[in-house]
Every structure is written in C-alpha cells, then in structure tokens.
Image (cartoon, rainbow, N blue to C red):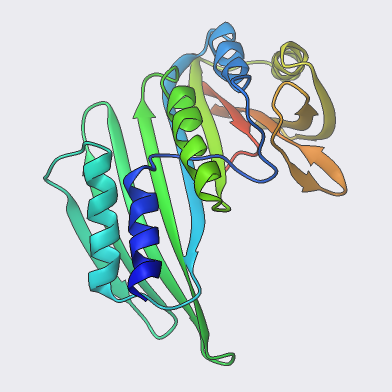
Length: 247
C-alpha cells in the first residue's frame, strides 16, 4: 500500500496539465491558438480541463488532501487555497481552488462508490482557466502531458478558447467564419448544427494527432458561433476535441 501511494504522489509532483484520448506527441496543437488569433475575436478566456483515474479504491479525505496540496506545491502555487469537502452515499469529493486576476485553478479528487458491485473508483480533475488570453495554454498542455506519458497514466484533456465580437453577426457570416477557420485548420467537416442563435461545426484535422470517435468518425475540432442578445456580443468558441463549456 505504501509503495502504491508513493508512486501516486510521485506522479503528481511532476504533473500540471495533460492531453486526451488517442494522444500523440507533437507541438502542432499550437495551430489552434494561431487560428484563434487570426479570427480577430477578443479573447475572453481559455480553459483546459483534465481528468484521469487514480485508483480503484475509495480514498480518505486525508489522502485526497495530501495529493492535492503536493500537486499545488509543484505547480508553484502558494496559499491561500479555498478548500471544499463534500460527501454523499455515492461520492466523496475534495477540492482546492485558487483564483487571481489572470487565472483560476481548481484541483479536485473524487471517489465514486458503486454499492451494488462493492467497488469504487477515484479520479483527479484539474481545471485551469486563463482570462483574456490564449497563448499560454498550449505550452502548459505540452509540457505536462509528457509527464503523464512517462508515467503511463491514461488521461483526458479538453481545451476550449472563447472570444467575442461586438454586435450581431449575420447567419451567413457565422457560417463563413466557421468554414474559414476549419479551412485554416485543414479540417474535414463531419457535423454541423444551426439555429437562429448558434452555428456549430465539428470535424477532424491531421494537424492535431489526438481525437475522439463520434458516430464512427474522428473528431478533434469543434467550433461554434453564438449571439448573446443581452450583451449584444457574438461569442466564438474553438475547442479540441469538443466544446465542454456552456454556450
């Protein structure tokens, strides 16, 4: 048991953020940030959300806290952290959150119990939000996914970049914007969805070697254009592999 926990804690000492399903080893994800900049949207935030299975047992709050804070130390993030603990019959959750003007980092561990099978699984979730810029998210992803690969840990990462334009964009212009961005990514369009408020597109590009499968097709690019009448702004979302934020 001590050896198992020593391995887990050692892994978390070298991790910051990660990749996702069917990952590759390349710097080509930088093209995502480049195409986002070329859209001329005003950057609002970038989000990187990562999770992976830690164990097949339920952890105690003390064990969760030790891993979270060791992880935070290696991220060179000092106090204060906001601490939150929750427990129900089926889930136990421990998380620490740190916010600044530029970013918000949440480190969370969840133990999920399956009473009928008398089993449990424990996951770690790291959510990093960068405000008003997108350039730093790719170097973070690349640097830390190498640590996961060396540790042979399966994990999933999703990246979403969000920007805005002033006012409303015509339906045809939304479509043209999405198609232009997909073309710059050298992507093949697999799915489209359109309403009066939203135009969304999903597809696959060889420029990014990681992907998920949807309807027996590879997907690693998802973008959407949505008008917010209350703010009188049009939002642009560009993600790999899919958009996970509400829009």
